[in-house]
Image (cartoon, rainbow, N blue to C red; front, side, top):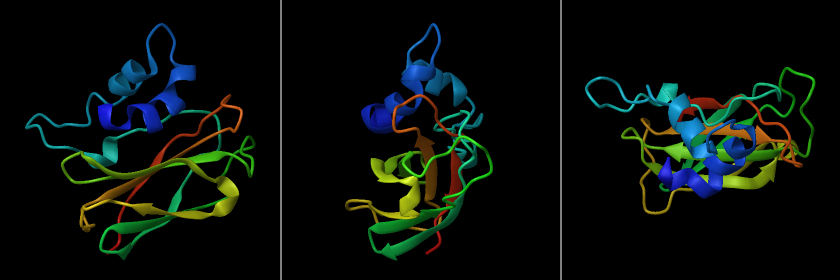
Length: 150
C-alpha cells in the first residue's frame, strides 16, 4: 500500500473513508490479500469500491519486455460513468510489489493505456488492476483485475 499511497490509494480512498484515513480504509479492505502462509493473493486486492459502473479489463497484454498495455470497456454497466472519468492502473507482481502504474493519466474514453514497468521484466504471473474516479472526485468504481497476457 505504501508504494501506491500518493498515486492510487489516496485519490481512490481518502474522500470515501469515514472515521479513518484512506490508507487505513485501503488496508482494512485488503487485510486478506496475504494468505495464512504469507503468500500474496492477487485476485483479492481491491483498489477501490464505489458507485461508478464496475470497470472491466478487456485485455492486459505485454507489449514490450517492460511494458503492459491495459484496455478497458469504456461503457461499463451502470448509470454514473462519464467519458471523462480518470483511470487508475497498477501492475503488481506475484509477490505484491507495485512494478508499474498510471494514476489519472488516461480517461475512460481513451480505452487503453501503456504502463511502463521500469526495469521489471513482465511475466504471466503479473496482474493488472483498474479503477476509475469521477473527474471531480465525487465517485469511484469498484476495481477490476486480470492476469497479464505474455
